[in-house]
Length: 635
Image (cartoon, rainbow, N blue to C red; front, side, top):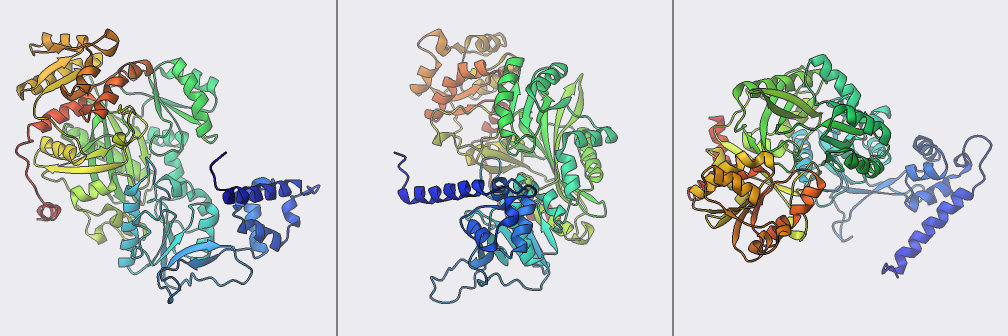
């Protein structure tokens, strides 16, 4: 019936029976049935895989009570080494896993008396949390080892570099849970634990770890919480006199609807404490918000839903910085996103240095970053996301969010500037200063580096390629060039885009993008492309004096644009739509057909503009090695 092997079903049945037995235990008048349990029974439950949290739920008590009872009875895990030598001879590889064996079983962890730094990894890779965080964990471990510390890595993903045999002195293949981390800390007794580098997973443990006496180094868990907590962060920005998009917090649907009406639509809505923009959406009207609240509150784990006023036509920026314990702050890099605000930062291409922002705006962004790092008393890495909106010819800067941790842009900035940010920040957390590491002058490269996202769309035929606030990319590439256009076109080629040199370019854009679409069409026509567009877009292009053919939308009857794509008549697609659900659905067939036909598609006008700028360099691309590039910076 289920196609699951009966062996697994028998094991699951045993666990279910055990849970029912626990529930049937007589409940004392005061306290919990847990108080009456003996060591053998508790050990048996742990051997079956019950976590402290699950047992707490079954016994109707707290995780802490279960942990204290377990320790009082001497029910503790022992650590065994993964035998990489097939039992032929003793293994020296310190790969550890925990097990609840019989009392008195040998523990093979063999911790030493050396000073140790423990790094908490990111756990399983998923969209929004991937190899970029593992890169930071590896560099932290290498830096600490170079400085004479013994390094302990805790991670449960064997596909990462942090779990390689030569990355750390000891590796624990354990889940990133409070129970498992506390047991390892108790065994190893590190002088410091780094939680900043594994993304949101270890960061969520920070407050509980500190409450249990774990020596967390770097930014304090309280300050991490101040950046994550909406009310506390709002108060901090108010004190610093920094702008934030109008926003509110809601815990119920009526409260959300009331506050949304006061803020005004469109709004960006999301659960708090998530990574990768999971369950994040742009809503344009009350009906959308009502549907969202019914779906999103389930995934927010009783945390509030955050409402932010959406900033139309804003440019987004990312800044990575390092601050040491003396208050010295180093700006690693300011990156300008190519796609507009509203596209998740992990999906947007970005340029370092910024390709269109003025020097005064960049200087103000740096000033605000340093002010926030100081107010949060950051020690280590910090990432800030800004939105810049042009109001009456003047750039207005808004703070979108601050993350006092490693971000997914750290590897890119490190490669672009030649400064290993993760190593430098780890040393700051361990007590060194920026000055003692020779880090004083900010690096502004004499070339452009562009990071482009890599998407898995080809593996999922029929999926919509439109970009939004929820992250969809699964990788990234980097292009370097003397000009922004050259760097961008290299990033496109690296991401697998087939940039055409001619043929028919199809353009269909939303009303607000039409003035910019005209210039895209003009540039493509100058390169020899034939332009075709839907009626509204074609009218705007023709009115500007650019030759343009008209093609039907799918709803307007055949022959329509999807027919042309399937017949391989189209070599490039530029398709932007209003963020409303019905508008996205109406044009979805265009994007899915282009994906199946492997036609290069841009779903943002900024992406199309950058592509056109870059395509001029297709026949004159130069090559430079990373080593030469970094040597040029240090000269």
